[in-house]
Image 1: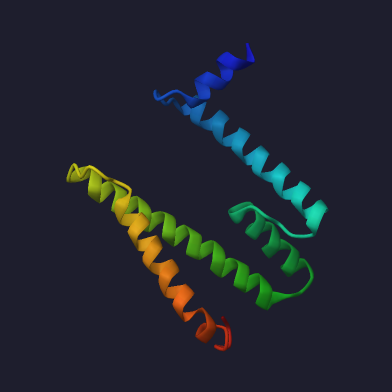
Image 2 (image 1 turned 180 degrees about the horizontal axis):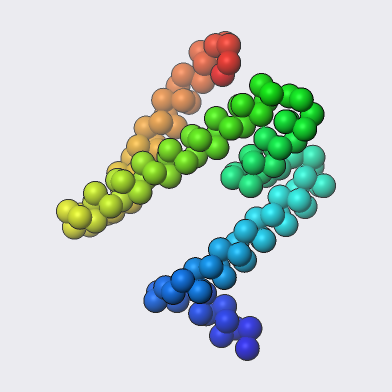
Length: 127
């Protein structure tokens, strides 16, 4: 049954097979969403898949500066994911009650900083 298969992908007990199937399903959904959004509004909407598609488009069109900008966004996303993983694992090792508080506080602080400095940063070349 399809519902049993879906439940096997979302259970707490993880296996390599269920992780692989879940990864394939999520990648397919992200790609389909990206393609549909591109056809609808002319922009890629998902973060990683959209940015990687954008890099490929910009390179194909010879727009190296825009491709580098998208690559910077991908690298920023990866660094943020790694920093979050480090902070969450730090909180888990110390048995803190709110494991996700540290990355959320850092994100809030960064959003506040960029919000406050947004007008000034808009005039800096390259940003």
